[in-house]
Each structure stands twice: as C-alpha cells, then as structure tokens.
Image 1 (cartoon, helix red, strand yellow):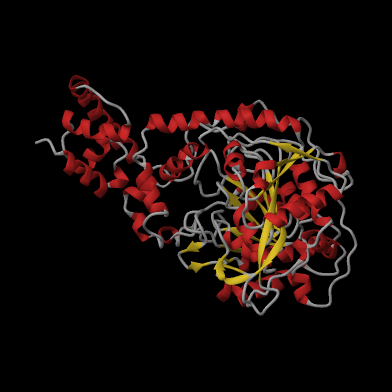
Image 2 (cartoon, rainbow, N blue to C red):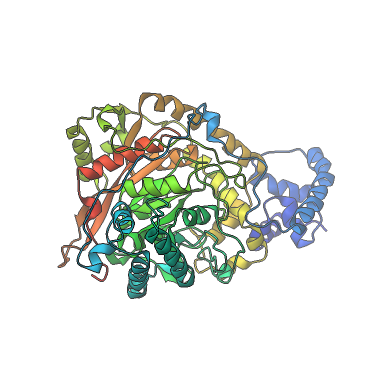
Length: 564
C-alpha cells in the first residue's frame, strides 16, 4: 500500500545515505513507487507536478531503481573518475608553450653547530650541505626521524613512519652523492607525505578509521617523482578524517606554536611537521583551503598549484574537479624547488598538462604587475594590520599596487554544491555500507552528515551548479589580464573560494605573529599569513613574488616553542 508523506520523510531520514531521489529511498525500503510518494519528493526536487504527470513518472522511476542497483553492483573504487571532467582552460587561458624550468644553483652555507639548527634549515640550504658532503642524507634522516618520534606525543602529526624505506633511500642517495651524482636540490632531503598519498608496502589511511589498515599496492605519482628526484620519504603525516579538519582516528594534530590549538586542516600533519622542523618539506593537498589554512595556522609556506599541473594519481579523491596537490615548506623558494620535481602531465590523471615553469631569483619583481584585492583589505578582521604592513613592504620593494575586484555578484557558495556532491559520490560505498558510522567525527559539520545531505541534491541542480562555475572562470580570466600576480588576505573577501573553484594558483606565507594574551612565553604566538595568487599557469611569478617578500622579511625563519 502507498506510504504516507510523514512515513516517507521519516524513511528518507533513516536511510539518508541511500535517499538521493525518491526511487532510491523506496528501493532501499522495498516499498512501491506511487504518485503520492512522488508528490512528497517534489519539495526536495523543487518542482510541482500534476497528478497525471506523477502517474506517468512511476514506470520511469522504477527503471531508475533497476539502474541504481546495476551501478552499485560495480562497487566503484575511490580512484575511478567521472566522465565529465573540470578543465580550467575553458576560461580561455591556455598553458604557455615551452619547457623552461627552474634556474637555480645552491648558495654556499656553513653547517650549523647544532642539530636543532640543521633541522630548521631550508631545502635550498640543505641541498648545498648535501651536495658538498658537509652532511649526509643518512644523518639528516636519523635527525628528522628522531625529532618525529620526540615530538609526536605532543603534536600527533604522524600516522606511519616509513623508516625502512627512508634508510634505504638515504643510503642510495649517499652512494650517489659520494660518487658525484647529483639529481638536483631534493637529492637526499627527508620529506613527509600527507597520508592520502599511496606508498607501496605501507598503510594509506586517509585519516579515517574505516581505512586505517588499507594498503594500496602502488605509489602515488608524486611519491615516484620525488623518489626520482632523490628525496627520502620518512613519514606519512596526518590529515583530518577524509581530508576535513585536523582530527583523525588517532587524535588531534596540534599547532607547534600553541599546542592547546589544533593545526587546522586538512593538511594538518604537513603543516605541523614542517613548522616544528620534523621534515625538510611535505606534500599537502587542497580542495577548499587545506593548504592555505594549515599554512596559516602553523606559520609555514604553502603552494597550491594551478589545477592540473600536478598529477593526483594515487591520491585519495575528494573532489575530481577541485583537488590539488602541492608543497608545504619553510620558504617559497623551497616550494618552487619541490614543485619543479612533481609537476607535469601524467596519462593516469587525464586533467594534467605540461606548462613551463620559468622560476628564477635573478629576475626582478619590480617589473611584475601586482594587483591587490582592495575589498579584502578594507573590512575589520584579525590580522588586518599585518596585511596592511605587507602591502607597505611590497611598495618599498618598488612595486606599484593595482587595485582589482574579484567577481562579487555570483552565488559562489551555491557553486560549492559541486564539492559536496563529488565528495559524497567518492565515498558513496562507505555511506551505503554504514562505514561512515566508524568515523571519529559525527553529526553536523562532519563528512557523514554531508555525505547523507548531498545524496538529496538532484542531478539537475548539481549540473546547474557546475555550469555556474563557468561564469567566475570567465570573469577571473578578464581580471587576470590586468596583473601578473595579486595579493589578498588569506581569508578576507571571497578569494579562497573563487580561486579554488577556478583552479588559480596561490602561495600562502607567514606575514606576522599576534601575541597571545596572558602568555609568559614570548615565543608562543599566533601566526598570520598573506596569500599571493595569480593567473592560471603563472605559478612561477606567484612564487617569485612570495620569495621576494620573504627576502625582505624574516617571518618564515622564526621557530615555534613546540612544547610551550
């Protein structure tokens, strides 16, 4: 017999994971599809039908039920993409031609007398010490693994140490370097991977209890590329559950500047480990702030590359159209050196493209056309004084700032429907199996809740939101004709959401620290940040300006108290 409106709504709530559409809910309940239950679903779909139209739909929706069952039998794994793919080139911008890469040679530096000082050296400095054999890769590996073990009870930034692999890679690097073979600036440098990157022979947990024993029999593309560059993987670092926040199945990753505070997410472990001098650099990921936020919270430098310049093969999928992988390090120069090693097209990630990366510190930044998002600096917000001071630093460098406006009349939040639905799709098997119940975070503002809620988004509305993204892509292309780089508050205005939706690159760097009230340790402070962004494929210019800013300041050189 037909079920009532009240019972239908209650049923949808009870099986929320499987109730995207009316027929899907009824399929799980084993109840018949009727004109009455179709009428109940109209409110969710946002349409109004006649009785005749509802009756006509019954047979079609029954066919939908059969189609759903067929698709679910395939049990699609997380790494299978949809046939519809996002392409930032739809904005009208194409990757420049050519193959130019980084122009950089190590600058001589002395080896510090203390291991603590060595641990906080930049990649660019460690590269010279390794190449000149003033330090060995094995020494650095022992140093960083020791620090990871020493501080992890406090920071909870490590999910898995990769000691066996690390010492094997370090020994190989030392043999090559002793023989005069230098693969480049990352040769022998220990690094950490956000634990959504697969590494053969080690767990890849995605920060979530349902996957804590998952072992994937492949290396992520960036893992292979860094190994080819001679880098040494020493740890798989924490991320919030399925790339949300800083809470994972083993605890909450802490901010080394203030251990009463989480390190933000979702690249929580990379942010904390880099800030605390536990790795030479790390690889994080961003879908909607997951490099920018922990870089800010932990006072490190984070580069979110142009969408499509770094292969995501072997990385957990959250959103096919928004996921990006990028370096987190102590400086923009370090990020540039890491990006050079991991960039480039990969047939296994169909959205990737090749583009030149003409990064050189020999080029003057005074010739760059630098814009600033005026509205982002005008409202009152924490860190405003620091951001205004950053603009003054740039002006003192001989840069004339050009005010620009980002699109402000578009429903940006509504466009993020694409993220929610893609995430729910990527983990639909987990939702349907009730595996989400094992996740440490539950309730509103968590993935289990969002996965269920996004199953109610009609396919038409999802595609409409996707179509809407075309508008900011076109608008941003027009705005970017005016500048080579632009500056924005890391959180002010709508820069973070817009540039993630459009695929534009950014570099977030520390630009000051706020003193915490009633704190006796002057080193215990709250980092602040500024974000440099730019046109598609202009990663070199963005990193070059960020590096020039850091050459004129010292915020990136300061160290947290860790235990304070």
